[in-house]
Length: 404
Image 1 (cartoon, rainbow, N blue to C red):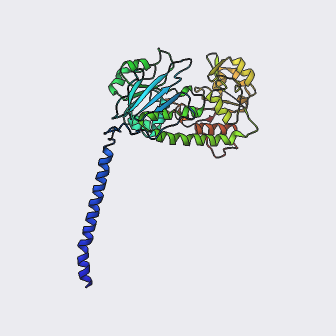
Image 2: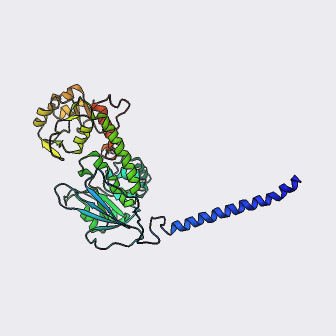
Image 3: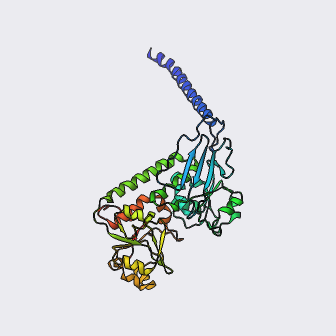
Protein backbone atom coordinates (compact mmCIF):
# COMPACT_ATOMS: atom_id res chain seq x y z
CA UNK A 1 0.00 0.00 0.00
CA UNK A 2 2.79 2.41 0.85
CA UNK A 3 4.47 1.81 -2.50
CA UNK A 4 1.28 2.66 -4.38
CA UNK A 5 0.84 5.93 -2.47
CA UNK A 6 4.41 7.03 -3.19
CA UNK A 7 4.05 6.23 -6.87
CA UNK A 8 0.94 8.41 -7.18
CA UNK A 9 2.41 11.28 -5.11
CA UNK A 10 5.43 11.85 -7.36
CA UNK A 11 3.54 13.27 -10.38
CA UNK A 12 1.39 15.39 -8.05
CA UNK A 13 4.50 16.89 -6.43
CA UNK A 14 6.05 17.44 -9.86
CA UNK A 15 2.94 19.20 -11.14
CA UNK A 16 2.84 21.44 -8.06
CA UNK A 17 6.48 22.39 -8.52
CA UNK A 18 5.94 23.02 -12.22
CA UNK A 19 2.98 25.36 -11.64
CA UNK A 20 4.89 27.18 -8.89
CA UNK A 21 7.84 27.84 -11.20
CA UNK A 22 5.57 28.99 -14.03
CA UNK A 23 3.74 31.34 -11.65
CA UNK A 24 7.03 32.87 -10.47
CA UNK A 25 8.24 33.36 -14.05
CA UNK A 26 5.01 35.08 -15.03
CA UNK A 27 5.15 37.29 -11.93
CA UNK A 28 8.75 38.33 -12.60
CA UNK A 29 8.02 38.98 -16.26
CA UNK A 30 5.01 41.05 -15.31
CA UNK A 31 7.11 43.11 -12.91
CA UNK A 32 9.74 43.71 -15.59
CA UNK A 33 7.09 44.89 -18.03
CA UNK A 34 5.56 47.24 -15.48
CA UNK A 35 8.98 48.71 -14.59
CA UNK A 36 9.95 49.27 -18.21
CA UNK A 37 6.87 51.39 -18.80
CA UNK A 38 8.30 53.88 -16.31
CA UNK A 39 12.00 54.02 -17.18
CA UNK A 40 14.53 52.33 -19.42
CA UNK A 41 18.18 51.53 -18.71
CA UNK A 42 19.21 55.14 -19.35
CA UNK A 43 16.79 56.47 -16.77
CA UNK A 44 14.38 57.85 -19.38
CA UNK A 45 10.65 57.91 -18.75
CA UNK A 46 8.72 55.72 -21.20
CA UNK A 47 5.22 56.94 -20.40
CA UNK A 48 5.14 60.52 -19.16
CA UNK A 49 2.44 61.37 -16.63
CA UNK A 50 2.03 65.06 -15.79
CA UNK A 51 0.66 64.17 -12.36
CA UNK A 52 3.71 62.14 -11.33
CA UNK A 53 6.50 63.62 -9.21
CA UNK A 54 9.62 62.17 -10.81
CA UNK A 55 11.87 63.52 -8.03
CA UNK A 56 10.29 62.13 -4.91
CA UNK A 57 13.68 62.09 -3.14
CA UNK A 58 14.85 65.69 -2.81
CA UNK A 59 18.03 67.21 -1.45
CA UNK A 60 18.09 69.88 1.23
CA UNK A 61 20.98 72.32 1.35
CA UNK A 62 22.09 72.90 4.93
CA UNK A 63 25.63 74.34 4.80
CA UNK A 64 26.44 75.55 1.28
CA UNK A 65 25.36 79.09 0.37
CA UNK A 66 26.47 79.24 -3.25
CA UNK A 67 23.74 77.18 -4.93
CA UNK A 68 20.05 76.42 -4.57
CA UNK A 69 17.65 73.92 -6.12
CA UNK A 70 13.92 74.18 -6.72
CA UNK A 71 12.01 71.04 -7.61
CA UNK A 72 9.13 70.78 -10.03
CA UNK A 73 7.44 67.50 -10.89
CA UNK A 74 9.64 66.64 -13.86
CA UNK A 75 12.49 69.16 -13.73
CA UNK A 76 14.82 70.87 -11.26
CA UNK A 77 15.91 74.51 -11.35
CA UNK A 78 19.48 74.85 -10.09
CA UNK A 79 20.81 78.34 -9.37
CA UNK A 80 24.45 79.33 -8.84
CA UNK A 81 24.33 82.40 -6.65
CA UNK A 82 27.96 83.39 -6.31
CA UNK A 83 30.15 81.85 -9.02
CA UNK A 84 33.25 83.94 -8.23
CA UNK A 85 34.38 86.92 -6.19
CA UNK A 86 33.01 90.42 -6.69
CA UNK A 87 30.21 89.57 -9.07
CA UNK A 88 26.46 89.88 -9.29
CA UNK A 89 26.36 87.33 -12.09
CA UNK A 90 24.37 84.17 -11.52
CA UNK A 91 23.80 81.02 -13.52
CA UNK A 92 20.76 78.81 -13.85
CA UNK A 93 20.39 75.24 -15.05
CA UNK A 94 17.11 73.50 -15.80
CA UNK A 95 17.55 69.77 -15.32
CA UNK A 96 14.77 67.97 -17.18
CA UNK A 97 13.98 64.34 -16.50
CA UNK A 98 14.73 62.31 -19.61
CA UNK A 99 11.55 61.34 -21.45
CA UNK A 100 9.54 64.32 -20.19
CA UNK A 101 8.73 67.62 -21.97
CA UNK A 102 11.05 70.62 -21.85
CA UNK A 103 9.48 73.42 -19.76
CA UNK A 104 8.99 76.82 -21.36
CA UNK A 105 10.17 80.19 -20.12
CA UNK A 106 13.84 79.41 -19.43
CA UNK A 107 15.49 81.09 -22.40
CA UNK A 108 18.45 82.35 -20.35
CA UNK A 109 19.15 79.03 -18.67
CA UNK A 110 20.95 75.94 -19.89
CA UNK A 111 18.51 73.08 -20.28
CA UNK A 112 20.13 69.73 -19.51
CA UNK A 113 18.55 66.29 -19.74
CA UNK A 114 19.08 64.16 -16.65
CA UNK A 115 20.37 61.74 -15.67
CA UNK A 116 23.50 62.50 -17.68
CA UNK A 117 25.42 59.53 -19.03
CA UNK A 118 28.82 61.10 -19.67
CA UNK A 119 30.84 63.87 -18.07
CA UNK A 120 34.09 65.80 -18.52
CA UNK A 121 35.48 67.40 -15.35
CA UNK A 122 37.95 70.28 -15.50
CA UNK A 123 38.63 70.26 -11.76
CA UNK A 124 40.06 67.42 -9.67
CA UNK A 125 37.90 68.54 -6.74
CA UNK A 126 34.83 67.17 -8.56
CA UNK A 127 36.30 63.68 -8.94
CA UNK A 128 35.67 62.46 -5.37
CA UNK A 129 31.99 63.38 -5.90
CA UNK A 130 31.80 60.93 -8.79
CA UNK A 131 33.47 58.22 -6.73
CA UNK A 132 31.18 58.70 -3.72
CA UNK A 133 28.12 58.63 -5.99
CA UNK A 134 29.31 55.53 -7.85
CA UNK A 135 29.34 57.15 -11.31
CA UNK A 136 33.06 57.24 -12.16
CA UNK A 137 32.26 54.95 -15.10
CA UNK A 138 30.55 57.95 -16.72
CA UNK A 139 33.72 60.09 -16.54
CA UNK A 140 35.32 60.37 -19.99
CA UNK A 141 37.52 63.46 -19.75
CA UNK A 142 39.64 65.31 -17.17
CA UNK A 143 41.86 68.38 -17.00
CA UNK A 144 44.96 66.73 -15.57
CA UNK A 145 46.32 63.31 -14.71
CA UNK A 146 47.49 64.61 -11.32
CA UNK A 147 44.69 62.58 -9.80
CA UNK A 148 44.46 60.80 -6.45
CA UNK A 149 40.90 59.40 -6.47
CA UNK A 150 41.53 55.62 -6.79
CA UNK A 151 38.54 54.81 -9.03
CA UNK A 152 39.54 57.57 -11.44
CA UNK A 153 43.19 56.49 -11.44
CA UNK A 154 42.12 52.97 -12.46
CA UNK A 155 40.00 54.34 -15.29
CA UNK A 156 42.92 56.48 -16.49
CA UNK A 157 45.22 53.45 -16.51
CA UNK A 158 42.61 51.53 -18.50
CA UNK A 159 42.72 54.24 -21.17
CA UNK A 160 39.08 55.19 -20.70
CA UNK A 161 39.66 58.86 -19.82
CA UNK A 162 41.00 61.58 -22.11
CA UNK A 163 43.03 64.54 -20.88
CA UNK A 164 41.53 67.68 -22.42
CA UNK A 165 43.51 70.50 -20.77
CA UNK A 166 42.74 72.64 -17.76
CA UNK A 167 40.12 75.31 -17.22
CA UNK A 168 42.27 78.08 -18.70
CA UNK A 169 43.62 76.11 -21.65
CA UNK A 170 41.03 73.51 -22.59
CA UNK A 171 41.21 71.73 -25.95
CA UNK A 172 37.73 72.44 -27.30
CA UNK A 173 38.15 70.04 -30.23
CA UNK A 174 38.98 67.15 -27.92
CA UNK A 175 35.96 67.88 -25.78
CA UNK A 176 33.73 68.05 -28.85
CA UNK A 177 35.05 64.69 -30.01
CA UNK A 178 34.13 63.19 -26.65
CA UNK A 179 30.69 64.83 -26.91
CA UNK A 180 29.88 64.63 -23.17
CA UNK A 181 26.43 65.27 -21.75
CA UNK A 182 28.04 67.73 -19.32
CA UNK A 183 31.30 69.58 -18.63
CA UNK A 184 31.93 70.76 -15.06
CA UNK A 185 34.29 73.65 -14.42
CA UNK A 186 35.03 76.36 -11.86
CA UNK A 187 34.93 80.07 -12.65
CA UNK A 188 37.10 83.06 -11.78
CA UNK A 189 35.37 85.77 -13.78
CA UNK A 190 38.49 86.32 -15.89
CA UNK A 191 37.58 85.96 -19.57
CA UNK A 192 41.25 85.32 -20.39
CA UNK A 193 41.48 82.23 -18.20
CA UNK A 194 37.90 80.95 -17.93
CA UNK A 195 36.77 78.42 -20.52
CA UNK A 196 33.04 78.75 -19.78
CA UNK A 197 32.26 81.03 -22.73
CA UNK A 198 34.31 78.99 -25.20
CA UNK A 199 32.68 75.72 -24.17
CA UNK A 200 29.13 77.05 -24.26
CA UNK A 201 29.72 78.78 -27.60
CA UNK A 202 30.81 75.38 -28.95
CA UNK A 203 27.36 74.07 -28.04
CA UNK A 204 28.41 72.09 -24.96
CA UNK A 205 26.45 71.88 -21.71
CA UNK A 206 28.59 73.44 -18.99
CA UNK A 207 28.01 73.68 -15.24
CA UNK A 208 30.02 75.95 -12.93
CA UNK A 209 30.92 74.47 -9.56
CA UNK A 210 31.78 77.26 -7.08
CA UNK A 211 32.59 75.22 -4.01
CA UNK A 212 35.80 77.20 -3.48
CA UNK A 213 33.71 80.27 -2.65
CA UNK A 214 32.23 78.63 0.45
CA UNK A 215 33.42 79.87 3.85
CA UNK A 216 33.08 76.60 5.79
CA UNK A 217 34.50 73.08 5.30
CA UNK A 218 31.03 71.54 5.31
CA UNK A 219 29.80 74.18 2.87
CA UNK A 220 32.48 73.11 0.42
CA UNK A 221 31.81 69.44 0.98
CA UNK A 222 28.06 69.85 0.40
CA UNK A 223 28.67 70.64 -3.29
CA UNK A 224 28.58 66.87 -3.64
CA UNK A 225 24.83 67.44 -3.85
CA UNK A 226 25.28 69.84 -6.77
CA UNK A 227 27.06 67.12 -8.74
CA UNK A 228 24.46 64.54 -7.70
CA UNK A 229 21.60 66.59 -9.18
CA UNK A 230 22.86 65.92 -12.71
CA UNK A 231 22.91 62.15 -12.15
CA UNK A 232 19.58 61.98 -10.27
CA UNK A 233 21.57 60.74 -7.28
CA UNK A 234 19.79 63.14 -4.95
CA UNK A 235 18.88 60.54 -2.32
CA UNK A 236 22.36 59.04 -2.26
CA UNK A 237 23.97 62.46 -1.88
CA UNK A 238 21.71 63.29 1.06
CA UNK A 239 22.76 60.10 2.83
CA UNK A 240 26.46 60.48 2.06
CA UNK A 241 26.69 64.12 3.09
CA UNK A 242 24.65 63.53 6.23
CA UNK A 243 27.22 60.95 7.33
CA UNK A 244 30.10 63.35 6.56
CA UNK A 245 28.46 66.22 8.45
CA UNK A 246 27.66 64.02 11.44
CA UNK A 247 31.26 62.77 11.63
CA UNK A 248 32.60 66.32 11.36
CA UNK A 249 30.32 67.63 14.08
CA UNK A 250 31.11 64.73 16.40
CA UNK A 251 34.84 65.35 16.05
CA UNK A 252 34.43 69.12 16.45
CA UNK A 253 32.43 68.56 19.64
CA UNK A 254 35.43 66.79 21.18
CA UNK A 255 37.56 69.95 20.88
CA UNK A 256 34.83 72.45 21.67
CA UNK A 257 35.40 72.68 25.40
CA UNK A 258 39.21 72.77 25.48
CA UNK A 259 40.60 75.46 27.76
CA UNK A 260 44.07 75.62 26.27
CA UNK A 261 43.96 76.86 22.69
CA UNK A 262 47.46 76.87 21.14
CA UNK A 263 48.35 79.81 18.90
CA UNK A 264 48.46 78.97 15.20
CA UNK A 265 49.32 80.73 11.93
CA UNK A 266 49.43 79.48 8.34
CA UNK A 267 50.79 80.19 4.87
CA UNK A 268 54.17 81.51 3.70
CA UNK A 269 55.79 84.43 1.94
CA UNK A 270 55.27 84.17 -1.83
CA UNK A 271 57.06 86.68 -4.07
CA UNK A 272 57.02 89.32 -1.37
CA UNK A 273 53.46 88.74 -0.11
CA UNK A 274 52.19 86.50 2.67
CA UNK A 275 48.60 85.53 1.90
CA UNK A 276 46.87 84.90 5.22
CA UNK A 277 43.32 83.42 5.28
CA UNK A 278 40.77 85.84 6.71
CA UNK A 279 38.95 85.25 9.96
CA UNK A 280 35.74 84.27 8.14
CA UNK A 281 37.44 81.80 5.80
CA UNK A 282 37.02 78.03 5.78
CA UNK A 283 40.61 77.72 7.08
CA UNK A 284 39.74 79.85 10.10
CA UNK A 285 36.67 77.69 10.67
CA UNK A 286 38.77 74.52 10.59
CA UNK A 287 41.18 75.95 13.16
CA UNK A 288 38.40 77.19 15.43
CA UNK A 289 36.73 73.77 15.36
CA UNK A 290 40.11 72.13 16.07
CA UNK A 291 40.53 74.12 19.28
CA UNK A 292 43.20 76.49 18.01
CA UNK A 293 43.75 80.19 18.58
CA UNK A 294 44.17 81.45 15.03
CA UNK A 295 45.99 84.78 15.08
CA UNK A 296 43.82 86.33 12.36
CA UNK A 297 40.49 85.01 13.63
CA UNK A 298 39.35 88.56 14.46
CA UNK A 299 39.51 89.59 10.81
CA UNK A 300 36.16 89.90 9.02
CA UNK A 301 37.34 88.76 5.59
CA UNK A 302 36.49 85.42 4.00
CA UNK A 303 39.29 85.72 1.45
CA UNK A 304 43.06 86.05 1.84
CA UNK A 305 44.85 89.00 3.42
CA UNK A 306 47.96 90.17 1.52
CA UNK A 307 50.50 90.86 4.26
CA UNK A 308 54.19 91.64 4.42
CA UNK A 309 56.70 89.27 5.99
CA UNK A 310 57.39 91.84 8.69
CA UNK A 311 53.72 92.09 9.73
CA UNK A 312 53.41 88.31 10.03
CA UNK A 313 56.68 87.92 11.92
CA UNK A 314 55.72 90.61 14.41
CA UNK A 315 52.41 88.94 15.17
CA UNK A 316 53.29 85.26 14.83
CA UNK A 317 56.85 85.14 16.15
CA UNK A 318 55.75 83.33 19.32
CA UNK A 319 52.96 81.20 17.83
CA UNK A 320 52.92 77.54 18.87
CA UNK A 321 52.20 75.99 15.45
CA UNK A 322 52.85 76.83 11.81
CA UNK A 323 50.69 75.01 9.23
CA UNK A 324 50.05 74.91 5.46
CA UNK A 325 53.27 76.33 4.04
CA UNK A 326 55.12 75.90 0.72
CA UNK A 327 54.65 72.56 -1.01
CA UNK A 328 58.14 72.83 -2.52
CA UNK A 329 59.94 72.72 0.84
CA UNK A 330 61.12 69.19 1.57
CA UNK A 331 63.34 69.75 4.62
CA UNK A 332 63.69 72.32 7.37
CA UNK A 333 66.79 73.81 5.77
CA UNK A 334 64.80 74.60 2.60
CA UNK A 335 62.73 77.31 4.26
CA UNK A 336 65.75 78.90 5.96
CA UNK A 337 67.68 78.90 2.67
CA UNK A 338 64.74 80.67 1.01
CA UNK A 339 64.57 83.33 3.75
CA UNK A 340 66.63 83.15 6.94
CA UNK A 341 63.99 85.18 8.78
CA UNK A 342 61.83 82.03 8.94
CA UNK A 343 64.23 80.78 11.63
CA UNK A 344 63.00 83.56 13.94
CA UNK A 345 59.59 81.92 14.41
CA UNK A 346 59.15 79.97 17.65
CA UNK A 347 57.32 77.20 15.76
CA UNK A 348 60.45 76.64 13.67
CA UNK A 349 62.66 76.52 16.74
CA UNK A 350 60.40 74.01 18.50
CA UNK A 351 59.71 71.94 15.38
CA UNK A 352 55.94 72.43 15.48
CA UNK A 353 55.57 72.61 11.72
CA UNK A 354 52.94 70.54 9.89
CA UNK A 355 52.15 70.61 6.20
CA UNK A 356 49.07 69.37 4.31
CA UNK A 357 50.93 67.47 1.60
CA UNK A 358 51.21 63.97 3.07
CA UNK A 359 49.36 62.55 0.06
CA UNK A 360 51.01 63.72 -3.15
CA UNK A 361 51.02 61.41 -6.16
CA UNK A 362 53.81 60.84 -8.69
CA UNK A 363 52.45 63.60 -10.92
CA UNK A 364 52.45 66.14 -8.09
CA UNK A 365 48.72 66.10 -7.36
CA UNK A 366 48.00 66.85 -3.70
CA UNK A 367 45.03 64.88 -2.35
CA UNK A 368 44.38 67.58 0.28
CA UNK A 369 42.96 69.70 -2.56
CA UNK A 370 41.06 66.75 -4.01
CA UNK A 371 39.78 64.22 -1.51
CA UNK A 372 40.28 66.58 1.43
CA UNK A 373 37.49 68.89 0.29
CA UNK A 374 35.06 65.98 0.23
CA UNK A 375 36.28 64.57 3.55
CA UNK A 376 36.41 67.53 5.95
CA UNK A 377 35.93 65.25 8.96
CA UNK A 378 39.31 63.65 8.25
CA UNK A 379 41.02 67.02 7.76
CA UNK A 380 39.56 68.23 11.08
CA UNK A 381 40.69 65.04 12.81
CA UNK A 382 44.22 65.69 11.52
CA UNK A 383 44.20 69.24 12.88
CA UNK A 384 42.94 68.12 16.29
CA UNK A 385 45.57 65.38 16.35
CA UNK A 386 48.25 68.03 15.74
CA UNK A 387 46.97 70.69 18.16
CA UNK A 388 45.36 68.47 20.83
CA UNK A 389 46.82 64.97 20.36
CA UNK A 390 45.29 63.77 23.62
CA UNK A 391 41.75 64.21 22.25
CA UNK A 392 42.19 61.73 19.39
CA UNK A 393 44.90 59.35 20.62
CA UNK A 394 44.16 56.65 18.03
CA UNK A 395 43.92 58.89 14.97
CA UNK A 396 46.79 58.74 12.48
CA UNK A 397 47.54 61.78 10.35
CA UNK A 398 46.14 61.35 6.84
CA UNK A 399 46.46 64.61 4.87
CA UNK A 400 49.02 66.23 7.19
CA UNK A 401 52.51 65.23 8.27
CA UNK A 402 55.12 66.69 10.57
CA UNK A 403 57.78 68.70 8.76
CA UNK A 404 61.32 67.83 9.84
